[in-house]
Length: 210
Image 1: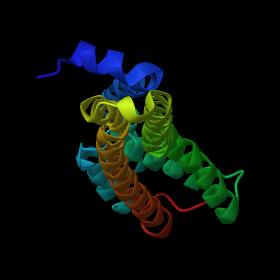
Image 2: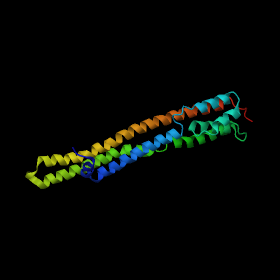
Image 3: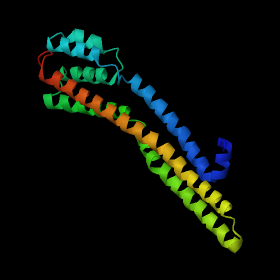
Image 4: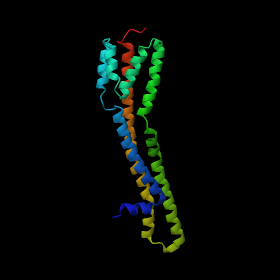
């Protein structure tokens, strides 16, 4: 059975590039999991929901006090929306626009790191295909040079080594694509929840606008 160092040696520079991509993919996935946890993607928004309940009952101070120390995206947006709603220098439309501006920045944090994963999903199979094409070219060059003296086992070994890079590229791209889809679904869910929170803040409860 061929071990990992032997596979890396046989695959050539392309397999090393794919191996580096695999390490980068794992690092990105772990970092993204940490960031999502830090941004409250799985917190359920219990504190934010409680603050909005206070807000809808007219208890503005209690709502702001609950949200002020929180670092989750939902809490930060809800806090910003409440502050904007109560800012007498802003019209209702301006308050909504200011909240939308803040929401865009928060969503940028939420989706950070997804573009590199998307790039890996695209280029890993292409790198694998490139390695296979280069390997096949080398195998058929060897076949041409050997003429009628070619050993079929040697040719099969060359083709096997060439196909190795395609398998490696797909082995990197498939989990990266799965992680990207999962992270996208989480981002979409959090975005929808943030939009719902902001709508409830602007349409119901809170202190009367100056």
